Amino acid sequence: MTAAYPRDPAQAVAAALAAARASRLNAFIELFPDAEERARALSVEDPRPAPWGLPFAYKDVFATVGRQPTVGAGHGYRWGGERNSVALDRLAAAGAIAIGALNLDPHCYAATGLNPYFGRVLNPVDARFAVGGSSSGSAAAVAAGIVPFALGTDTGGSVRIPAALCGVLGFKPTAGAVGDPGIAPLSPSQDVIGIIARDPALLRAVFAALRDPASMEQHDGPLRVGLPAEWIRTGVDPEVAAVIQSVLRRMTEGGALAAEVALPSLDALNACAGTITSFEASALHRTALVERPDWYPAAVRRRLVAAAEVGRDAYDQALRDREAHRAAVIEGAFAAADVLLCPVIGGPAPRLDGVDDDDVTIAGATTLAFLRFNRPFSLLGLPALALPAGRDRNGMPVGVQIVGRPGADDLVLAIADRFGGPPDRPA
Image 1 (cartoon, rainbow, N blue to C red):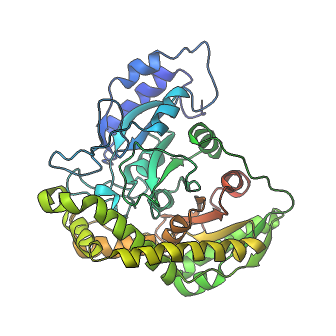
Image 2 (tube, rainbow, N blue to C red):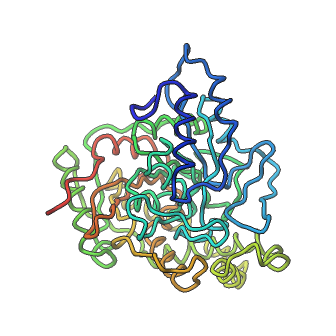
């Protein structure tokens, strides 16, 4: 168990459910009262390592026996998948207890935390500022201390963005590390199950319980950290750039070696990812968008209408471009570095108080800004960790992103232990 939660699973679950009911963050779509009964079935006399006995919650995109997810949509929408979530089954087998399904941007197709059906999720650090998304409730519930960890999904930053804005850890594994047919898709070739937590050791334990059998990449010698200096010079607010430099300084003082690396242009990577996401999302939602437009808020309808314009030829070219970009990054940047140090979001957290939950213009612009530094690594299938690193001028969290080559999940996670934790905020 973690220090912040009772050692008795039934007590831990009862406390988490009470905190969820008392919370005004709107992080949950549904709570599961039977969680206490499931917790009592665990023997306190025979405890096992974490995540055994711990309450958790999950983004409402995971299917279970007897419950199909809302995917954040209203008017009776339920995803019609035919398989149960492998991830939830593995966590149950490991002794973790799901207490509820979490709120999100509808259909996972935005990154703001705004939801006209279930209401927006509020940032527990300061409710006036964006919480991010689409795994909004997952980050809010963990940052507020309601649960020690939560599951989300990440197609273009949907775990890393809200984790960074809420000041917690958000991990997107290597593509394919956790295969699961029981989650509602957005862009199947990019969708990845992610984990949000406060404690690096717990994050590693949850990933160990979830991952498919795979060999672990070994790392010897000093850690080599690559800094994409051109990305930072041209697209990052000086305040965020200063936080990145403070983390790099901490890493080099801890024995790491730093070097500037070149990456493909952000615009090219985002365009490629956008084409793939658009084509795949349109294929999934084209029929329902016509037959039940009420299942889609205005901002999502707008994106899906635009997505329908992407043709098969453009999609096939984007798939070829993705392979070329992946080869360029692995043979280029990762020849000189073991991990990359990047921003999660290029500027301070924006305020969204006063913005309508179905606002098309601001939701779209905010989403694109949030995706900019995250979507490239989803496109390339690389493991990436949002790491709390500082505060902006408004006292809101600033995160940095640690990115590894395919399969280097354990190395990326180890950095949270070695170099994690925000420095003191400058006076």
